[in-house]
Length: 135
Image 1 (spheres, rainbow, N blue to C red):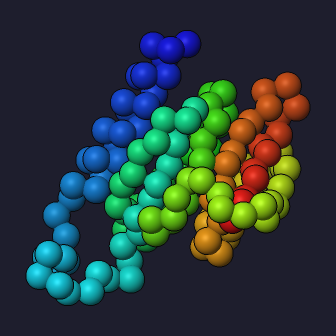
Image 2: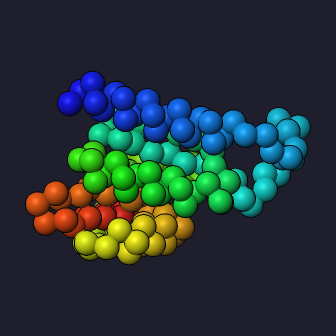
């Protein structure tokens, strides 16, 4: 299992690096310019191992799909947008359970847009996604 996790984590990290390394027309942020509204800074974890990446809005959708796929494979995944920590500072918690991957995707995107940290697990026995949002 540990070797399989390493392969999946490496694949996910390499996929995100490849996506985030594409040339963009952004002005160098070190010069003090503002970042475009399309830049999304993502903190995410796969079974507790934390990663971060920067995505465009168009890449965000594919990222959430990858997280759902990892959940279906038995991994617990968590993610947040725009440099939010993956550690919830308060006890506000919302849970959503569904068998529909599209609904899990839409709900997760909506909650991260509202500043929540979203954690997704998948129950192979029931076919249900359990999505928990905290902030």
